[in-house]
Length: 342
Length: 279
Image 1 (cartoon, chains in turn brown, yellow):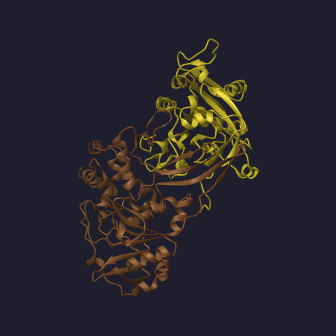
Image 2: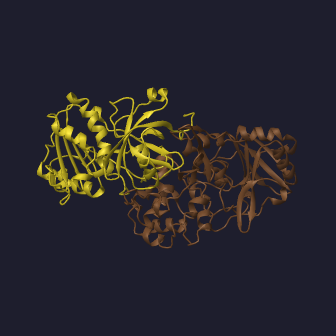
Image 3: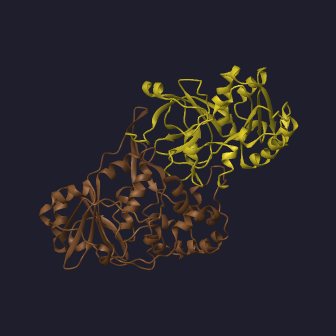
């Protein structure tokens, strides 16, 4: 996989001390600003209230920022009983959102997610949110043993999918790469906080994530792995809890359910996971993926095989969240290495 | 690019309810909105999401033929929460419908050919759409044979249409029930669908076989068709994986890289053999 790159429109610097001002200006303008916060050991994205609530000390947030585009639960339609028939209404367009502090791998993950939803039959709400969302990525200074972005063709310096990418270059400064029109527009609205800058080489300021596996080789051989006995052995610890899918920035599976009283209600879209046994269960009782190893295999092959066939890209960005969150110690890197070893 | 909410259903009025068999019903549905009715088009093999507001959506094929305008029909078995809520509906009630979704049977390519339909149990509804489509264009096709089996005589669906097909001289109908499923006045065959297929072997020459039924029936029927000289390219089937969205997004129906809801549900047998056995 080649390192993905985008075209940068402009370079600026921002004093880290001015983040507070920047955030408050965004908040004042009425936009929804999502920032990393911490509760217990969990880091997640939530609306900005005060700079003191913003968490800066994380390798990677526990929960991905995908809910900015694809909420955990969202309304598809609402309905009201009306004289024997129904009045059906659509959800209203949401307000502009800025996501701050996602990692470069997340920006690529969200790009995959929106490309998937907008591909062929374009998803109405994801498209509206995508149009209304600006991503301010924070390049990684650190990594842990679960990070593998470089193994899937990315790097802590990737700007793909970001609107603005910030890199801490020391001396209390963020180096800002403005990548899209949306990014340019946001900077223009807060121009007093940003100073013009020359292009610099970011490499010395970002983490150097070691290569864990060869994804070109993986893609080339993926068809041969379907019948590998490694799936069974490696999936034995899997509890089928679906936590991996819920923290993943590229997992797009969902369920549709109604919530209603006798008068009115809503049809909701909720995150789902192919790790759940009932995910594929037929009404007849027949289950096409009856055992956990089938479901684990489907998840891995979707990320590294089916997405390549369908979307011409991997649907894994190497964020490592699934490994960190798994209560049973399932490890996608180990699974891949194991397959490649055979 | 679509500019609308794909999840917005049409409002449909239940025009007629037919009890087909124990816990199996057919709904005839008409569009509430005349413009919806006029712009609505579908082809044989497609399906939709039928919903009870407040209960949820359920996936069934469109069981009526596209040659019959102004309404659609669906046949379902009461098994879960939503199908039970549907089964409790009365004529005149309003339900939701999204569709049509999925690919279609390539009926246009079958002109001048013999057709044999092989169906088991609740799998007749998806084929009934194609059967009526072909019968409404009868002179385009040569021999039309229907082999249909169910557990018991009582479990056969569309009994009134089976009678109709039996009496037509341009259709050969063979009905069968599993051993022990016959009634005293049963005049059809007794035996499993694959066995009966072997008993009345169709000519494979210039013939398209359309097969739909439970996995075990398909598994035992295919070798017989092969033995009769059918090729994978002349056999079609339709899959019914669990689905939620119907438009290739929710992931439930995925078989390998295929989304049965948009890449299927209709598969030529050689295409089906390319997929992992996850259907």
